[in-house]
Image (cartoon, rainbow, N blue to C red; front, side, top):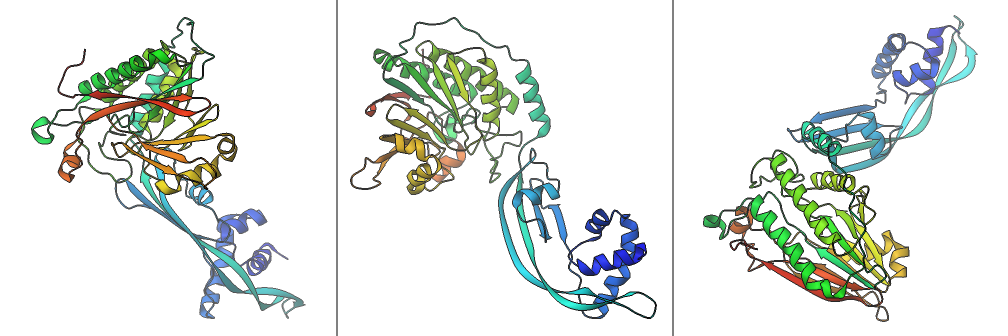
Length: 439
């Protein structure tokens, strides 16, 4: 057979193949294959047989949103569809997606093994069933990439700190958890509008005061380690648009993002140094809904700052939920916006069965609501329960929350004293006043 006959025969045998796949399989120029199969497709349409076509479209639906539509016989997963569309996942985040499939029966030209009067192969129609996949993906733009590059440059310029060894009480049974969630560095509130002021200077002041106050109140127990969950909306904004990453709600922000970032970075480094005066520090990154990207960058900065310090560890795993075993205890952390609260115990038991099985006292600490609440889940009557604690916040109230009536009577931070064999045995609270200067 000549080259044209080879193309025609392969096209009839594999109607699901587009010309790119045929070109790759036959090692024949794509333009030549297009010229050969175009009249074949037209003839099929005339006979009432619509050729099966694969489609892929990626379109921006707004400045910060995009949609991917794909129909394919071979691309069957989310990851494959994103790769096929060359979606830059450093700039886009998947909001939601759907995958569907259906069966299609085609009429496939099959060689009878006979030749016509001109010597060409004779084909007859035979049915062939294939599976077609339809994938739809909705995406949200993540952040300003120029700003990300600026942050990466800042990270490379940060000096590493190596502090002298300290005589810690390393063999004790106590773990102190500094539970400062929802600090919202960069939030702006005006007292004439919301009842009190809040800005980056006030945030720094009350944050550092709370850390020192909580350390002071628990120092008599001589904890052998300090657990420092970090993130959980530590920062109020995630990119220069001053909008929430998911719903793009406009936020009241104090100053520019880089300035907010610099202030928050210096404050958290100070706080960790306060902690490591008492005991070695373990930092866990827990992403929030306001700062899922920028809090990670800051956690990455912390890993560089304390890279040469054996008394500070940084867990910046991209996993949404974090776990910290301590003797017979398991401390679990998530921001509390994605998972239904009633499902959290079963989610964790499924996600980390070994940690769950090895623990007797389990607590899940969440933020997001800026208020204190505690719940108990009993797995079965003969097993100890799981405590879910909703942690309060030291942050102010911005205009949006004030108008909705989400007003707090006090602002506070908490810490928890874990004992290896008995779980949480103590709790300390630091109350802060946004209008009163702390010394």
